[in-house]
Image (cartoon, rainbow, N blue to C red; front, side):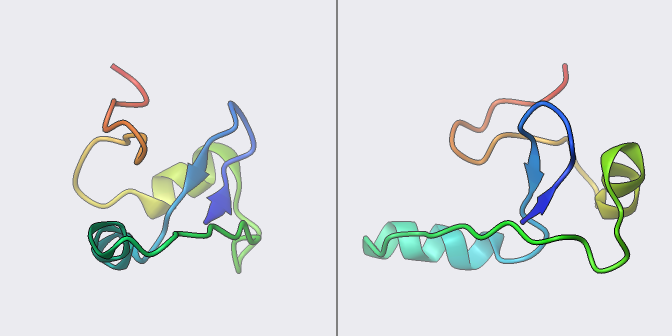
Length: 66
C-alpha cells in the first residue's frame, strides 16, 4: 500500500485478488504501508496508479469521490 498523503487514503497497488482470496479462506489480511518507489504522493500518485475504474474503499466498496 502507498500513502496518498491526504484524507488517510492509501492505494493497494497490487494484491487485490490475493486479498479477496485470503478473506474468503478466513486468513487475516495485514496491510503494510510503504513509500512509492519513485517517491510519488498526492495527485501524482493517484494519476500514475489509476487503472480503469473509480477509486473505492476496499472495506466498504464505497467510492472515494462521487
